[in-house]
Length: 310
Image (cartoon, rainbow, N blue to C red; front, side):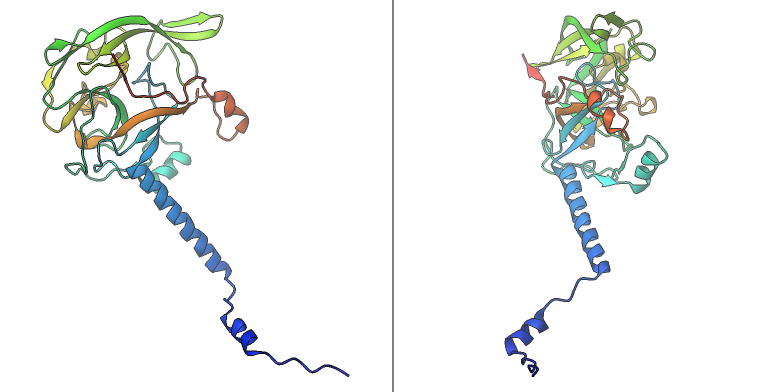
């Protein structure tokens, strides 16, 4: 004799009625897209207002920074300006990744005067800066502040009419690699071979600014930037120079010469360089993981970029 079906209780009926409908495939995809969107927003917000990574693309800040160094740049020490937001440019990203063109991956907003919670950098700070009218970040050192008079004579820096203290130091020995060549383009004749490998032997002059900040510069002989007529830094602007004095396009050079066109508006300062995270020697093949670890340079990770004080 078969059993009659059990009656559905009110509690079971209510549970069945309130059971959520199964999520469709389209809804699941949309949920993932929304999650990725908010992650991207969070990352861009962090890059815009707190800190961002920065890659050293040139030799202009040698001997302190080498091509291939990766840094952390903080955005908040000087407040925020029109260059602070990180806004991706999808077309530029495509051209970089697919067409192998070298151009900025981001969009710079139109110039807007002033800074939110603004503060001037100190002499000797290493900062990133966007050239007026451009959208590519440079990295340079702050030399002159508003009201200062900056001059270069025979390769020596003169600040407010007084020659900045300069001390000749022992040469820097920079290991030669794919990201730090030594010869044809610059540092001609300075490559030496040793039992430990090839090095670039670079003449060093240590400068000490009036506030006691000291840092090493390279004096590679005569160059166009060795003589620069005295200029007074206007209000709201700063004068920037690279530590590789004979191979740096900075405030001494016009925008047409890929320089900064004189003292730059403080609004164009994007942040302060803090420390090196890691450094690559230029032999990395991104599609070949076996090349990743051998390309790391030793002894550079964690190096502070805050200048020392005498």
